[in-house]
Image 1: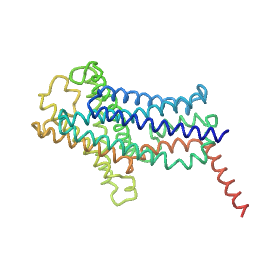
Image 2: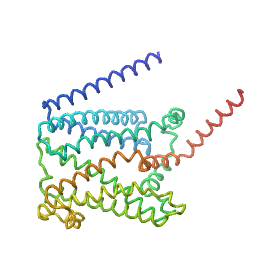
Image 3: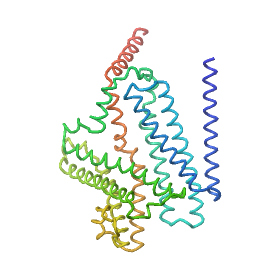
Image 4: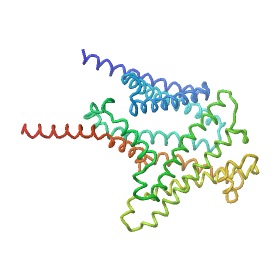
Length: 374
């Protein structure tokens, strides 16, 4: 019975996957034929974003507290992640088809024709890279020891302390080197917050107007638009300062043992993205004569005097910034930046002394059993 049930579950999963792939192809084809609306893709994107965020919150409640029923929470966060992953794939298919049609019809500027495929490729490489580095590499360990990581066996107080001390505040790094701690915090939180702000901006800049709602993005003095401008400049300034500190640290430790804690290519790459972003903002402000509300883009205002003038220069710097940003997103899982995702998970796991001891005991028993059978 158990074998039949497992075979049925696998068969059902394959059927659903094939159905989802087929639906994605249909959405892409309908969009490519000009029979779709951009709102469909953005609606799916918002559903995917909310589902993934809900799954993360439910997983946090599951791991960090004793609240609610364990089995129910596990089903809830698994369903949320499952829904988010598939609606995200459908959203990409729908938007790709729609914008491909618009591009072929000549209704999209050339720079967006470059940016669209680059953004899709970057997101695909990012997703695949994170899956391979964080999930696939750890699957053998999860398969072998996953049964030990039961909710009732978790040390929630230790997990919460590790989350605050090592993931949010990075206190261990602070005790080792305040300079490296500040550099890391500026880049880590600057980049992370900027990413979340961009997700919210997509909703207000692209999705909501496609539903026929008020387009605040073309109201420069709207309080919410000003808040976005200020948040972009604050987080961009954090990353800029962090990159400059990283390059200064590289010069300080050249030829010393601490040089292993540097990542100069990543710092230069990210610095290019931030600088071209501020130049793009400065060019936009210069083109419209620094309108009312431009105070929120205070860093862009500082770059305005050296920003390119004219539509060609503005288009070029925008394109360089957009393609560099896409390239950096694809670069994240390929180099040391991916440790920003993997290291916090390792710190959380290491906080569970009892579970690690149980894992070690199982390994020792396995070795002892293997030795006794020789």
